[in-house]
Amino acid sequence: MKARRKKELAKFPRKMRKKLIVTFLTITILLVALIGRIMYIEVTSGEKYEKIVLTQQEYDSTILPYQRGDIVDAKGTVLATSVDVYNVILDCKVLNSKEEYLQPTIEALTSCFEDLKAEDLYKLAEEKPKSQYNKILRRLPYDKVQKFVELQNDTKNHPYIKGVWMEKEYLREYPYGSLAASVIGYTTSGNLGIGGLEDSYNDTLNGVNGREYGYLNSDSNFEKTIKEPVNGKTVVSTIDVNIQSVVEKKLSSADSTTASTNTRRAQPRPLFFFPPFLSLLLSRSLKSRSLALLL
Image 1 (cartoon, rainbow, N blue to C red):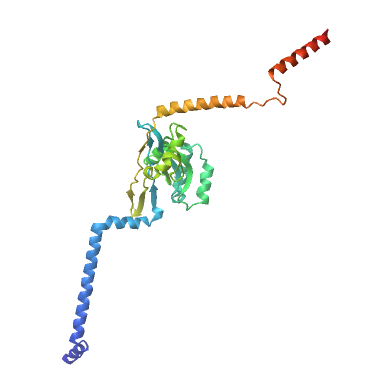
Image 2 (image 1 turned 90 degrees about the vertical axis):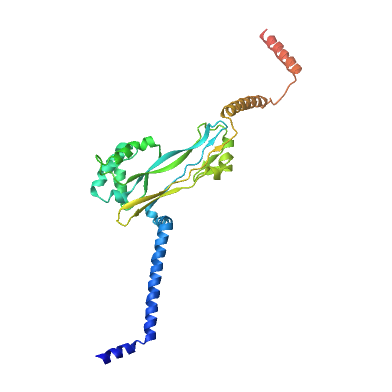
């Protein structure tokens, strides 16, 4: 027995055993260091890396639009502003996930929105059962969607209204219409300023979009992380609305007068032009001839 043990020990000489021990200790130290590093990252940068992971889950994220800044006159009167409007989005995947969701949701939609027809919604749900983004109504003010939102939030009385959400965006408005339009400018889609202050101060007026991330936590529960949008800044102009309005009215009146005068001046002359004294003699001659004929 002792001889067998000596043979087994002989198979692992002392140098080999030392190498094995060193290797084991090295691996152990590396594992401890790795665990320590992970714990350090979790404590110091956990939120940062969590957002990086969440940004890769595009199917569960929603852009939160920023509000473009206002343009005001010297007294603070708003010349250009962005008002919030809502798109009604239908998620057919959620709507079809349970049979009891379909009818109550479509009935709620058609009762709150006159432009929607039940047959069209049933057809959409049937033809695109897995589609999660269907814009069924566009750019409605909040008072137009409020009734449906209240129904949807009343889960006690309406527990089966599912698969509908409101996408918020902003619509540019000019309270004074075309007043100082050449100075203010206007915007196109994507909050791009064209002409005037809208163009010159485009970067100042624009902000940064936020994002809402949806993900499953360790308990498989759906949670949300929200990065709030940064709205644009207000631009104060040197325009005075009252003075600008008076000036534009005067200019418009002057333009109308000038146009009328130019119209009169531009009337075509006769093909043959007679000086006044010749016209008088001709008319008298014609009169005398007429009288002679009558007599």
